[in-house]
Length: 372
Ligand code: KG4
Ligand code: ZN
Image (cartoon, rainbow, N blue to C red; front, side):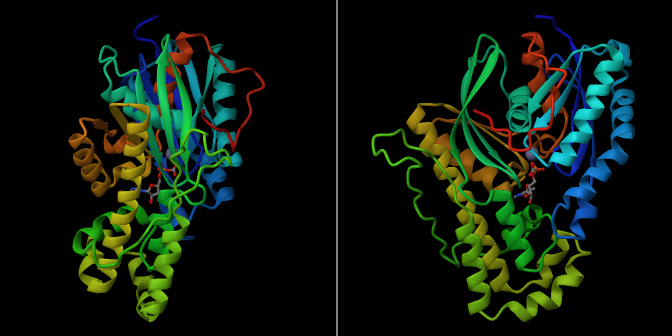
């Protein structure tokens, strides 16, 4: 293995154009992210065509800035890494075309990285020392587009993944975004509800999660640890309708679009704050329960949590305290590496680069790409 190899990572799968230089899969020399969030906030969600156009506008300056901040010359790079999927097709194509062209012009190898593997490496790169022997971990990837549980194992320097749980409908972050929208709060909903839930009573509204049946019909099949978040979104909608909350929501929508979450708490009534706190408590409780069930079943002592929802304060504190009671270690990435970034892509590329696992010249966008 060559210590000190320099990889330029490029990420454009959704609404962040990102580039980062990482040395040896761990040492972040630069981590530049151009977020399109404000533009998409106008529409209450990511608009795919606008995302592609913004990536095209931002990709050159973002890569230039990442190289300049790292103080690295293009000739010194050992490889280029790029997200190949999953994500929005038009968005992925911008990063892939750019990375391919750069690798071609510099005559450097190109490494393709699954975005979900990137999220897992956002934690691995920071938290797990090579000598800690944590070569078998449970990873919860929980974001606006994904809610997955993976059993990840390192064998011969290469990580292998088995998908042991997934959402059967909405992702957890998507539920946050949809509930925030239906309550007239800003976008993206996660940070809003995270902040406002601190001011409400989390036991005020009892939400229940239905048990999800095994995917297969075979009763002897391995249990799965699936999630479902569309039911709770519908339950919130029903609560709003039956409690006559609509007029107040419609009245605040325009004003709240220009507020920060912390400024909104004093403008909201107790009923809404209680509803938000109860929603978050139920979602967090469900994520924690499924992750711990899976850790128990597979005999895993380490849980990694990553993706945008990993920024959530209640998830961080509840997961850490509940797991500690069972002697399970929980690791989260630092906040800058929780949401989409390219350092995690360069880090995930490192073991592949060392193993000579390079992308074929025909590499294409894989919007539905799975991991494990
Ligand atoms: O990983 P990410 O940046 O992009 C995707 O790959 O989806 O995650 C964005 C998602 C959004 O749904 C957002 O509402 C959610 O992560 N999110 C949060 C928090 N910060 C972002 N959800 C709960 N609490 C937060 N503090
Ligand atoms: Zn992501």
